[in-house]
Amino acid sequence: MLRTLGIVKGALLTGKQRNFLTRRLDGKSVLEWVVRQMTDCQLLSGVVVVADEGESGDIVGELTPIDVPVCRTKAKDTIAMLQDTLEQFSTYSCLLIGCDWPFIDPTIFDRLVRAAELQTECDYSAFQFTNEIFSVGRPYGLFPEWYRSATLRKIAGKLDDPIYRNLPGTFFLDNKNKYKVELLPVPTSIDRKDMRFTFDDEDDWDNIIELHDALNLDVLDCQKISSLLDSRDQRNILKVL
Image (cartoon, rainbow, N blue to C red; front, side, top):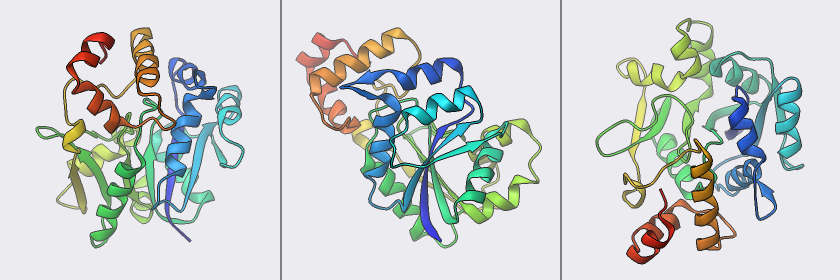
């Protein structure tokens, strides 16, 4: 059995999200940047990309590095997608991330896994900003969600609320009296209002390109972006985020 499986959510995407994954930085697709950051995590036993059946899933599969498995699913919601994946991979826990943002940091992923594993039978773990819960039940940008596989299997057949089925993390946040939930503070270097964590429009993509070119990184590191934003001259030149 694997200890913790990293799951990249390439299924249940909108057309805009799929198109974003095909965009390229230094010859690599956005999806490949995300996957490679995941494979650099020290505490993940493996990484899998989940893709829909059909043509939309074919696009995701073609963008996935050849050494990373692709799990195809017919699921109509996130909880069913996770259930399908866990049926194919025997793992104690899983770490779920979306593909909204390429500047992810493997050390943040490892921090979440370590914190969850230090708790006795933790069911769910996620990050939170200083004044609010950041992960309201969905993989979003930089920040992953950690789930205990056995708990996901137990609740999968019981949840009928469409919000909980699509945003299972919300279920755990709403039921903290029944489940062991571990919430970590977002690192102070990136707990800031002038940093965005998703791609929403063409202006966001232009900002991503400018950040990548300015930082000249082999790895897209969000904490180095934070240092850049702290530089007044660079911030005025780039006008980013």
